[in-house]
Length: 146
Image (cartoon, rainbow, N blue to C red):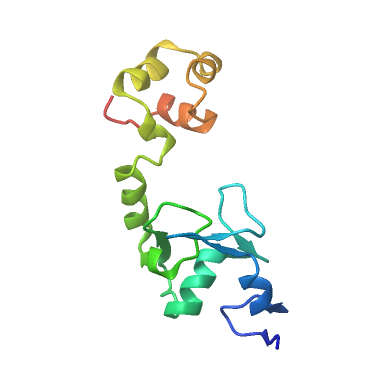
């Protein structure tokens, strides 16, 4: 029997069966096979699926906290792979695990972008770095120490 849930952790008019049908369980991750946003996170209406999963299996997310993936896999819903933390914790994870585009640069590449190249040339030379990251390097918002 399908039960419609209207509590805080469930988007309106979505059934548990609708959600569970879109989860593919692998050996470790539970991959969301429904709507995915531009960053690779699953979505149920306006709610990110990893946040829904954390609330469904573990309880409320304290105000001001984020849900972090231990597996670094945005569409994963496995509650064993999810933990809460601050934005600072999440940013530290991203840098330690080399998930930030600016972390993929060497210091020599960052110096090249900041002092030698025009923005258009930097985009061509370093296609793995976003235009925003290049602008932030050139304006001193990131890589401040160079």
